[in-house]
Amino acid sequence: MRNIFTFLFIVSSGYLFSCECPPIQPISKELSKNYNVIFFGKVDSVSACATDGISTVYFTINELYKGAVSEHVKIDFDCASPCLMSFEKGEEWLIYASYPKFDKLTVSLCEHSRKFISEVSKDYYFISSQRTFEQEKQFLKTELGVQAFVEKNDLNEQQKVLKPHNDQPSPINKLFLLLVSIGVMGIVFLVARKKK
Image (cartoon, rainbow, N blue to C red):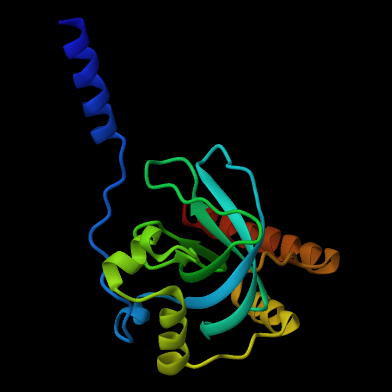
């Protein structure tokens, strides 16, 4: 009886804690519209998994097919849930990333990002899409073309323009605002006193 409960616990825990992704359709020009950045690149480094279950992978991009990014890019990914991803230095990937927040690229296991695996029979994405890594790279080149990288300085300037600012007035302007506020409060006080 004890063995039966142990077996049921192991089977049910495997079911509860496994990641179930829907079948992945082969990437198409239409499906590529779901992503902000698509590229072929190599992993430079990976950060440790943070307490919020997010880690960051740093890439050098070899070929950029879609998006406005520089040659070196960082991407956040899930490193703690059952649908966690795993990256190692030196791996080559086709990355399909999105911006859920400004300047914060992310990838998900259940999307089209795929690692180069030399043994095709072990490549899950080949099984579902019937397209090898190289065939998918060629498809992306043909359909989307190879894009130029954004210069780091241009991107920084765009970010400065787009990000909210918290500019403080100069000391003279602060004094002027204080005097105007006191004056307005004095007028309101006098008007309120006359009405009584």
